[in-house]
Length: 166
Image (cartoon, helix red, strand yellow):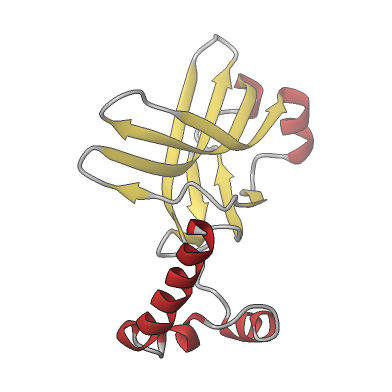
């Protein structure tokens, strides 16, 4: 079995499209009862280990004969916004494409190809167009140093304290 990603660095953006292909070789099509292809993530490390399947497709023997197994078969799905890939001391989050081939005698073979899901960098043109009229920019607020804003903040606080005391 072989899984091939469309990106050489095996890095995909969260919310982006994953494109890959899979192929089963060295096994006769008549021997295969089904193939399962999934895009999933799992955790490793301390505590409970989690596994979640994001994309799943099962091909039975009839579908495999119809598709023909000579060529690579495509996989395409939109990735979710999270969880992102992570490698820490106590926890690892790993994304991967898994292909399981079930043979007539009840045996199975599994191939897995890992990839990294990373945060998408925001598009500066979209941010500047959408946020310029809606919310004040944090940089503008932060331009006035705290020690210069503090006297007016203290005056407002003291005036509120005086109103509640009377």
